[in-house]
Length: 282
Image (cartoon, rainbow, N blue to C red; front, side, top):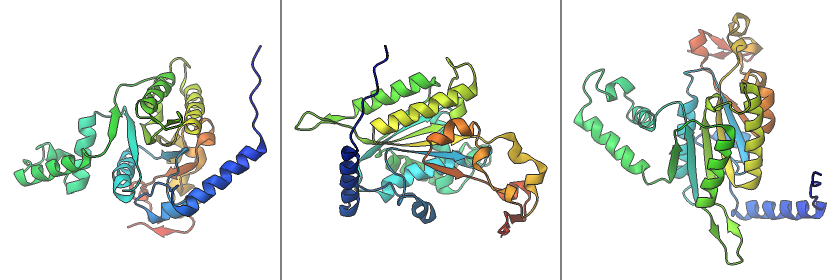
């Protein structure tokens, strides 16, 4: 016989809410500021712990770059906040991701850094070394081996436990952690058999983990094919915008998301005017 769900009193919820508001008021509880003021304004002054952010875009639009910018800036913009980063990086090797960061930092191409478009100069190599030295001071860990949703959960549980501590009353204290997944469809769909079932399981897993631990999830996602329909790529149409229904497996994933970011490069679709506001695209 299934054990009934344990209830809690409404009083506990109100006490917790007042404690949280007081912590925000005093500055003891803060959000994780991002490099973009408009994004911070649209949220509770940045990313909150116990939350999930989904970033959806076409291939090659810059999802990984945006995620990397959030991570790099997080340490600089939140110097008083003690946190770690765990990245599930299935799309590319760690060294390739690092080279892309050098490329963004020194504003030179990936090919150039690999001496495939002119030889990398000693000066630029030293700039890369300086960037790597600065980045290595941050507590960032990477998991490169593809895994299933149950293995994803187990890895996070182990990570949170490994970096936890006990307070004087014997209560376990978990460290604030950013967990990134690049990207959702690169998880092995076993034992579920198909991608949609896997995404549903991923959503439930992420929600369970963010309720239990002080985690800010950042999950990258592809878009459905209909984003490329010709009628959506005509100048000045509402369909130019990325909609929540465009996220692959949107019903499975978005009901578990606190924030959705849609990235677009209208110029790649040769749009001159973007959306009903007709933003001018140069």
